[in-house]
Length: 324
Image (tube, rainbow, N blue to C red; front, side):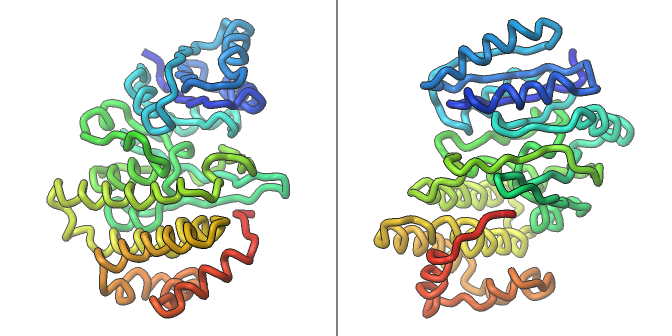
């Protein structure tokens, strides 16, 4: 049994995945298993993966190739193949520092943690920027403050497999669904206070396409709400659930929706998120986190109403902005 398994989902990544795998082969932790899944790529990804595996016989790489099912089912497939005591994710256009998994594993084993969180870097053609994550406490504090990304975290395999959490088949924003549903189960988390992963923002990445894929977030957040209702924790997490809906549908989803080129589709998509927020949380302007956390982002959220929603949509459509 390896100490750590790393899941690498691959789809049409022939020009980037070698750098990803090279960064994993360079890890100082040698008791490492790579679970690499070709999700029905239509380019030469599979050939690149096979050649890399042949050139690195000393690396414990399990290579799987399956029909295209999308990123969520590919992640589920990867988790089902994990043999490590802990596991992590690394996407096929990102890369990481050599010490990542050794240092995160040391912290996890020292305190028998269920989850370890690190900082990371946003990276694109303009440069890179450090992104801090945490520290935060388990529970609502985590839900409000976490970055819902998978690849700067290390997960205890036996703990994850004891839960009824899966990535939502057929949807993007699967990381939001997985981590927000995971949140209320966690009791022991730790932070490295060090950045390892370079999250590379590709201009043509599916994550950054401004099309009807952003509608997926609406369905994903419905799944999250139902999960908390099904587990009897909706009321105790109400304020945090309300706040992440504010962030999603006035922040991330709103910004992406505002970039949709077709004006009718743009208005429809924005309205769908706005309606979900207001139907589920009609008093969201009084959210305690919105009032207490401060900052420009929360001041902007507080300014949005039905009568000026179109104005903000127009402004964000006209303004070009990225994470750097």
